[in-house]
Image 1: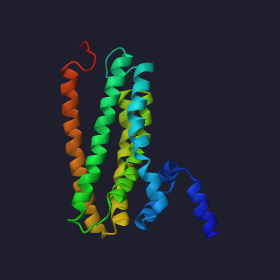
Image 2: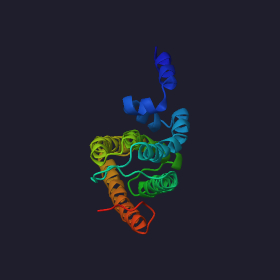
Image 3: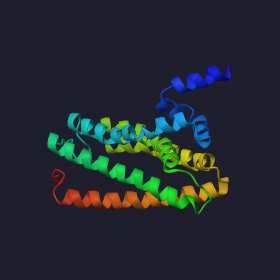
Image 4: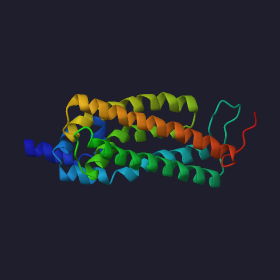
Length: 209
């Protein structure tokens, strides 16, 4: 029966396992299960691709609603450019977090390979990536409502999963997770500043006020 359960888990798509039974997946990572590590290492591109792709589709079909009387439609060229930069920004945030997490790990007694950190942060990022499907209907208020629980879900996976996967005490895991959240907040604020600068420089379409 145990073998049958393991086979059934392996047949379940990895994204479904992350969303439905992340605890078991995190335990597999703590045991350095090679199959789970390999699948998760190949998942990052898919997770990073969903937000810019859905943003481009939603922006062209329905237009972004920023509180203006009419939706703001983007041209194909603008959508491709902004979505590409969005993908680059997400990729930088993801991989810089992997590098910083491994660097921090030595301080908290968490010694693991880059592959383990990559797999762990792929699990943590999955709710945010799936939540970005809200970009298909690009209304600011609607997207905020969807992304708030997605952020809470990802933070829960980070705080609960990090000490399990890295094999460190919960109190150290809490401190390390909080340090990573601090880094992500700084990166998010910097990204907003860069985005505002690029928009002001003419990358985005002009908005009549």
